[in-house]
Length: 42
Image 1 (cartoon, rainbow, N blue to C red):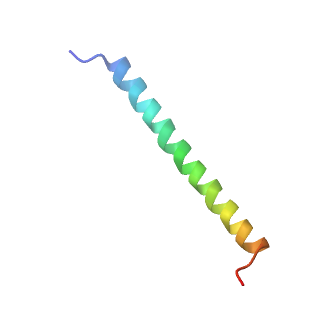
Image 2 (image 1 turned 45 degrees about the horizontal axis):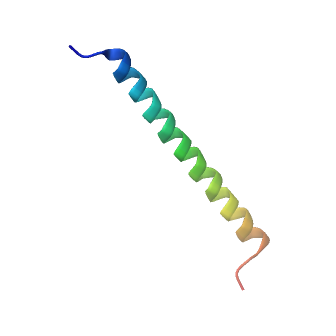
C-alpha cells in the first residue's frame, strides 16, 4: 500500500524546485541581456 501523502508532497517539492530553477534561469538570462546592453562588446 502506497502512502499518497508522501508521494504528493514529494511531487509538490520537486515541482516547486523545477519552477524555482526555471524562474532563476529566466532572471539570470535577463540580467545578462541587460549587462550586454549596458556594456556592449568591443
